[in-house]
Image (cartoon, rainbow, N blue to C red; front, side):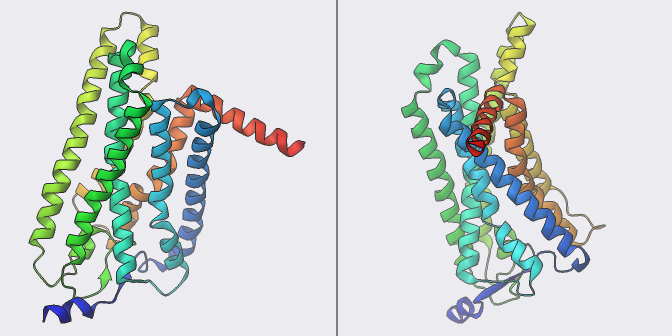
Length: 315
């Protein structure tokens, strides 16, 4: 019976926004625009960091990785979502669903760890400015980045294996526009206790641990800034971490709003899925805008990149 159950579902149906047909085409246009802005914005940040020697420091290496994540994360879900908005075929193969879930969870987990590393970087820069170059060396930065990506993908491997080792013999309709752990686990006809406990225990340890590192780092940062006597000194110190702080608030705010908020009885499931797009689509678009507006060095590097591009086109 177990073997039969494992083979009964060969594909899943992503419900997406199919029960809001009147807004399918406006949504398609909106998300094509958002996706292109995301790719262009994060691509420009990467180009600025690669071409501007002044930005080739640990802080901007971390920012470059954030931009990579903000390109990869929506790329795991948006192209399929756009296809589903235009066509009647909303199916995704069993393997395709597993791969989409794996990369989505891996990239989201990596971003959680990366934000914690970025908070630690700002903690060292503000609380120990004279020792910053000794502590945050390029070798140390590479080690932290390797650990960040490795932890994110290992964490996702555990969750993906746990989720897709379940038996699926009920409905194959995933109540989301992409394959995510909660809606896929909900389709199982076998015990989901281990999969749910893995999310709570492993996800809780990694997620809470990363959040605490970020929180404690900023407690020390704020405490150090408040001890600075001059207003100019406080402004300068705060400006070095303001962009990252906004990104942290945006990331955790949309995550909590998407996954932890109580489900509303006044909205249809489709509107709740529309809200969940905040986390996977809107945030990656806003991150490069925040850094380009708040960070003068990034702003200056972007101006140079665009000026050089315009001059080369005229020549």
